[in-house]
Image 1 (spheres, one colour):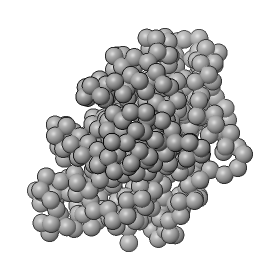
Image 2 (cartoon, helix red, strand yellow):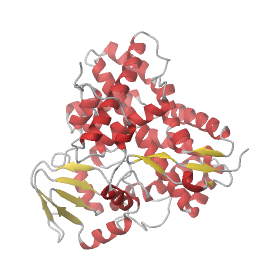
Image 3 (cartoon, helix red, strand yellow):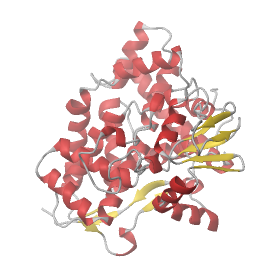
Image 4 (cartoon, one colour):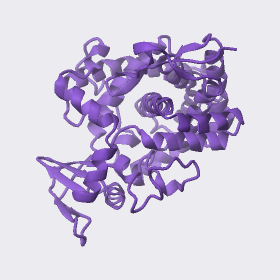
Length: 418
């Protein structure tokens, strides 16, 4: 038995759905929190309520996320539980083990393959999906979530028999690891069940690769080669790498691309600019335009941390605030990206804005190792859809974004076929 014991109950996606009036009110607030962040940045940039602190200005958010010793990531135990083995980058603090593992992952996922493999696979699959849709498509389930799962198959080397279920499993795991600071027992139950299913799929890929059955050039094949050369890379370590890169890829990119599409459908001016880049086949401009759109509706308000020792944020300024050890802290990256003290014309749509304006992929030590991979996959996934004329929401409730927990699950769109 693995570290994930006791065995989980069968996975039920209904466990991910928010229930009750408070949950709906919070979801409504998080859909458009910009006005609240603007008030807090001006009036109360560091808020302490009960056992929580909220940091909203760019400089203070950067200070927190740079200081991994005082504000470490709290995800490690959950990551280990779901991996059924060792920790992964997303749940690790800095140190020799972190840097060695990060170097291994960078070697397994070389940057040059983002264009030569990931973009090519994503574009080919997405083009086929859009071409076969006859003018109407559930853009989240059948495109935005489906394509990264196909990348897991064709590039990672992981066979996924039931892609809808696999997407739901990864969403449950990501919700539990990174979106559940209250440690809900219901979400834990769903995630443990999902983790059991994903481990079964990943362990199958590792076994096939070690037996010589993985396609050449896949991550699974490379992992098998690494295992043969380095006895410290056990099956548990290989599993943690694959699961870490899957749960940091499929659900995260689903949310990112889902939020991009939702914002494009809300803002015709954004959509026109992005479609112009897609139709001009200017992938660099398209990527910058899509991720500028994403700035207006990012993954979440920001990552949370747990303060390891008493610490004064923004020391020496009028807004300085002491955060006590044990306090849970939200580093408001969404707010920081609209802080006019550091971001030029934050309310403007500007695909040419400076990279320093963005905190979409995190900040500091835990800046996303798969950021460029995500850019390649999302750009080529959305490109065929964006090139279609008359792209719009489907009529009625089908055209409204629906979620599985905090993640996009369904959003039907229509467009001119052919």
